[in-house]
Image 1 (tube, rainbow, N blue to C red):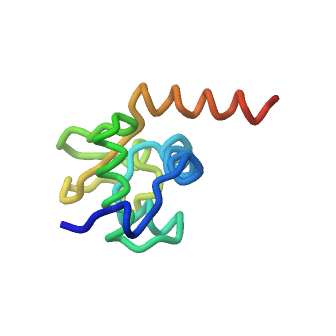
Image 2: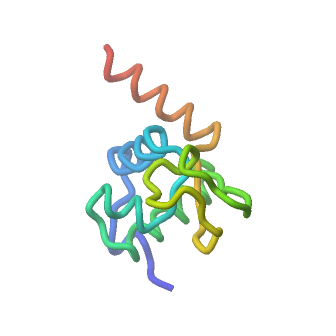
Length: 104
């Protein structure tokens, strides 16, 4: 397994950008996040795993997802063949703190 720290520096700016994607679009998976943030799938997969381990994201339970839950999906429903993530409470709090800093 690759070491994330050698390839991508997981700084507050990158964490903020990824978490804002989930704030805006809700439930999503790595390929879609990578497209939005213009990053390759392998790198964004590692970033999402790291943010999950840090508690900023939670994995979405298996089951059918509807477009209203995963807004960037092209189909109305899909089978869960991807690992879907969503913001955790810790991720929401991180974004609130950042927004408070920006408003000062």
